[in-house]
Image 1 (cartoon, rainbow, N blue to C red):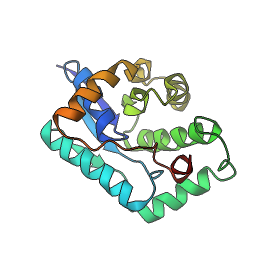
Image 2 (cartoon, helix red, strand yellow):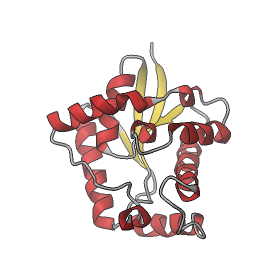
Image 3 (cartoon, helix red, strand yellow):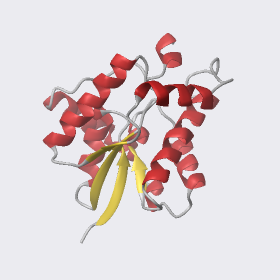
Image 4 (spheres, rainbow, N blue to C red):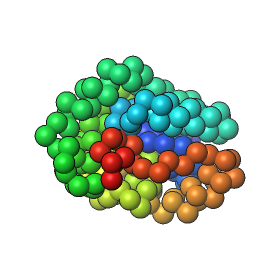
Length: 175
């Protein structure tokens, strides 16, 4: 019997390699919570791709608080004062913290990981540090999924998955 892991999907391209890497060792339940993504049409496009890929892999997907307008405003308040931080700086760390806290609130102390560590544009060490700070018992935060990037690229191409051109928030879009 496999251990269960809750996997936060930041986008479909990062999900592909992560799921492929984890599927043999874990029973995976997918979560979507990404109120940082801007504009709303981009948010919907990314969510639709995650839903599409979840169907391909026959995985359950739970969408947490899917009222984009309300959740995006809450996210903006959470990162308030950090709008001018450089990409990869304090604003990004705060954003990771916000999303991972929401995931941990919805899984009642179970093990979880995030596909955020797949991207070579994200600091996996920071993401793992934030995850461990939220809860030391989450064994999944010892995983570094950065090695899944090549597989993610291959699977994204195979399944014709939309690959975004920026991190997601309005501040990364301006960059």
